[in-house]
Length: 86
Image (cartoon, rainbow, N blue to C red; front, side, top):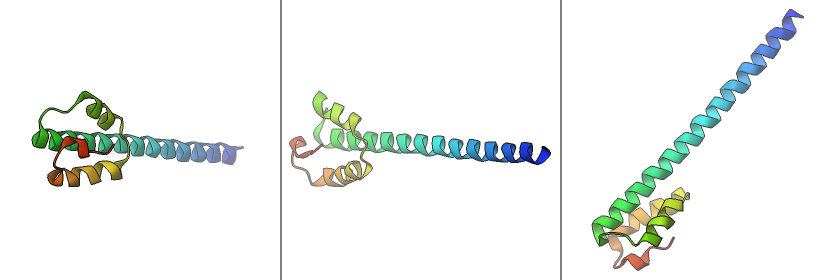
């Protein structure tokens, strides 16, 4: 009986660590997305001034890190705010 309790405890601890790791990964992903959205907004505002509300909302809703990174890289080559494809 004692081994069964130890095994249950070990499995419980394993699941707790696994769940905690999932939470850490989710939070890290969300923070990274927010940082890229902030960087994109800042780059666009620096180049074109205040953003149209519709574009600001599309940026806020974007969770695709690759797309955000690509847009940040492209801002310096954009001629107008209408070039932002989101």
